[in-house]
Length: 342
Image (tube, rainbow, N blue to C red; front, side, top):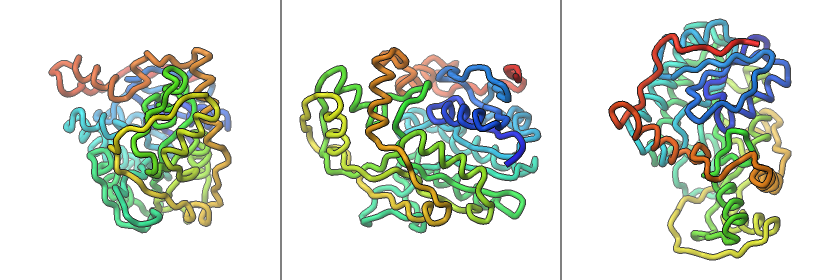
């Protein structure tokens, strides 16, 4: 699609890679982000960085001015981080996301792509999880993901194409790295401790390589509106037993496997037939590639395991604890500086 693309949360784990991919493809990209976890985006041609907050309606309105498409990534990500301050989580993950949707529609944005999550399905007994199933979120994080999907689809019309991306757990390297996700945790433990501790092991975990997820966002931007409008898509590379993920790491990084008590009952198999048949989308990377990427980034000094910004809950707890009232991080005031456009 022509016109500027706004990536809300474009400086995050996925956003940093997505932003650079879209710039490489020749798009004009605006990144709207708090930059709480740092700025790993170099100044580039056709890139505008806007330091802003979803809770600031004036800043959101300015960022959307003249935008053709929105990719909404920004949120407090994962269950522990969302539970840290429920009021803050609602203000960002529900109120803020809803306001972006409403303002985008008001300003004539043509396409809105929302980063939901496979976690909206909750814990299921069905052998495979398909998009037509009723959502049953069990955490604050997944509940707001599900509710924003409903808000988004309610706003969709012939001039406002809406799509939700229910991606599985992302793995692979990003300059704004996360070391608190299953594959990164295993790789780091194998490298540093030479031991992987597995809880249970037979639970299924759907994973997707970072670059494959970014492929899908590119596809969603250019797909015919009729194929994606008011649709949710499961986006996943495959489903893996936790034990099999550990063994993949062990094959590439020699280490011992040990077993602890069964603590996490979540187990589900995500079905991706819909996205394959509707859009021809097929992931191309192997999860083993992500293992190699993470290992190389740590060994090469691109990622430091002692950097608290690589752990969402640790860094957000620090930000919340050092905020003015000790509970809620104050939103940026209207008129926060915008980095130059190159």
